[in-house]
Length: 199
Ligand SMILES: [Fe+2]
Ligand SMILES: [Fe+2]
Image (cartoon, rainbow, N blue to C red; front, side, top):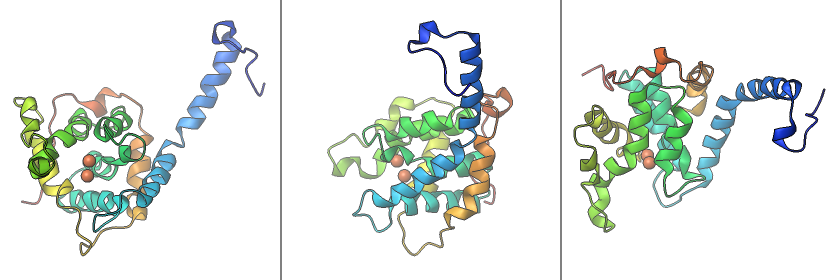
């Protein structure tokens, strides 16, 4: 069997869907490498900053790694702006959707909301509410998102910073996307791991 027999989903049988399930599992094994390729595509986007979008992503992840943050944090920092390619108006939600099945809830929440928290640095300059993050007041991860933006995101536009190359992060990205999706042992709702271990 090389293709399903049906042309409408409702006509498919067990054999068709078992065949597809096998194909989809094989396809998901390539997720990490497809994401890394998309990350390199970021290099072509958004000129005007002193670093490219890829440079910003790598610098954010490098800072997370230097701070002793765990793999979930480092990979989340690396991919936090990957939505810029296809979803410029909700890039944070887009990136969080990619990460959510594979990283701790803490990290995917922070990635999802980082756009609101970043406003504190430039909202007044673009006619937006700098305190947009206040709608998340009381959330268990509020301080984590504030720290993510302060320590890793907003300061990672420095062309002089000693940023690690993408090759350094490949094993970490592959490790994360090889995990069992939505594994409760990974998602760990309401568990907070520190962003910074060395201060
Ligand atoms: Fe962002
Ligand atoms: Fe960013």
